[in-house]
Image 1: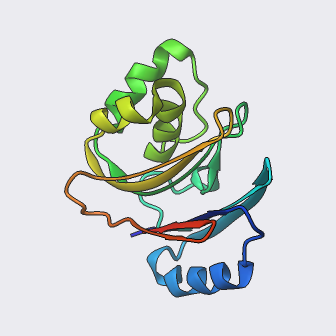
Image 2: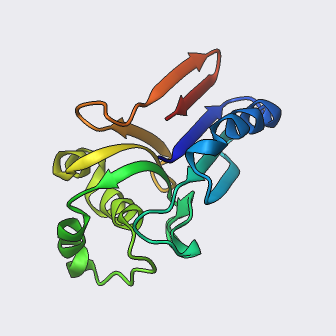
Length: 163
């Protein structure tokens, strides 16, 4: 089981607390730990992922996964059972996939179809955070049954999301 942590704030993020949280989650994803800290329009954003490799064992499937062209970012915990079907929907966009992972399919689906359509089409168990760099929006979701938990906390000018 993977683990994700996301935080956004109007003020500088306390990385020490987030690194402590990553250490606490390390057992959830022993294969790789990745993080990305960015500032966009005076907003601080932090993405962290603890990876347990299942579908694509290559390093190309590590997260946070960042779309080369738009800069959009995805951190994802779970499994999308119908990702091959969704990948077929994306063929008309002539995407050159770099992985065989459901994460990359989810990232492209979110970019091309948007979060609302994507979540309706997903079959699986998931929790994820998607940052659309072009629209400067954050979207987070969990599966309908809550099999993959997703917790959030709002404090002052800070939103924290974790699975």
